[in-house]
Length: 161
Image 1: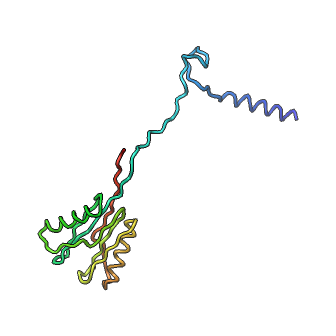
Image 2: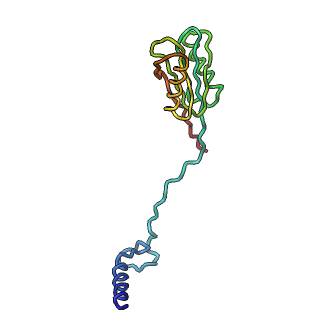
Image 3: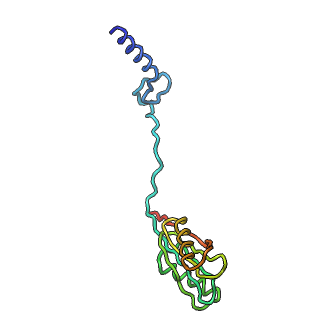
């Protein structure tokens, strides 16, 4: 019993040596005085107030070419469609058609390595999944070897209040 009391006494004596004061006081000033400063608190930076706006993308092509034009980061589906079509028509092609629209997603287009057969296109939440699905779609269209020729994602835009 006496050993236990000695151990407790030694423990609290040593532990008291590492106690920290609660205020920052100049030398010679008693804690609690008006000259003492409060302890510095770690304050996290303020969180920005606002909202994330999901954006749209679209891909258009023309019937008389194998080229395609992409629009990303648009605020509406209509804006994405119009932008992709404008790019196609500005290049001098007629018969431009939007072939896919997507919101807050990724898109990928895969083309046959041989140049024969139809391309594959897919959208997904993740770019790696979109690429994989586009290659699989290309292969379902009759090609044995396909590679990704385009991939991109729409990115949300932060609008502060």
